Image (cartoon, rainbow, N blue to C red; front, side):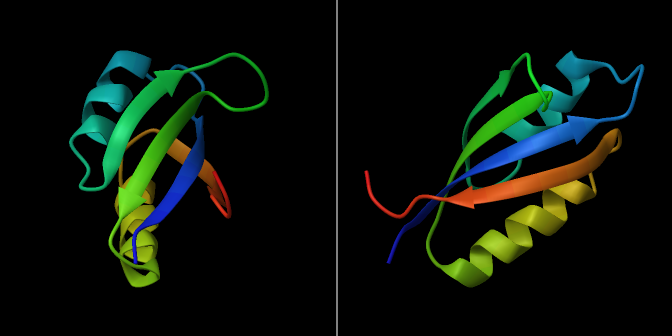
Length: 78
């Protein structure tokens, strides 16, 4: 079963967004990465094989230097 989600990413003040985007693009499961305005700094569209892979994805994102917090929104229908 394929799991799709959006990972909303907050970054530390002064973080180099282009560097963060490159690191996030290199994370397995990332389909797209966009810097955005609003309450979050970056949104990743994610696609993985199963829910356990999504947990591993979240850990990988948290290990990117400059990432301070994330929120995951799993796609239920679409």
